[in-house]
Amino acid sequence: MRRDDRRDEQYLADIFESAEHIAASIEGFDESSLDDRSFYNNVVRELEIIGEASRSLSDTFKLAHQEIEWPAISRMRNILVHVYWDIQRAIVWEAVTVDVPELVRLLRVRGVPDTEG
Image (cartoon, rainbow, N blue to C red; front, side):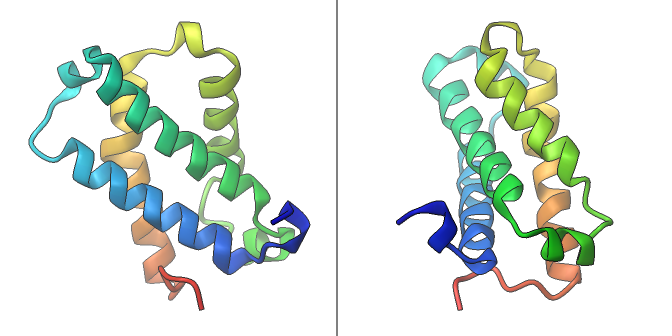
């Protein structure tokens, strides 16, 4: 499926799914777990998906949800993909323990469904 063929609901489903994967992956772990390459790659990949899906949402949707820092989410994705050699683990840990749960909370508070419709 081409990007042009996808709707906001599908990108939102991707965001919620990746957020759920992150939550399940980090449960019972701490920041030092990011020293394990497989663990690190798993959570970073989910952050990349969240960033790409967020970037792909329509401008109309993003304008209706301006309380979410869409440009910051996109910047995080770009850093993870293009500056992968210089990622600070503390920033990744904060993203998966604070930023992603807050993104999900804001979307749910605004009544955004977390499954495809």
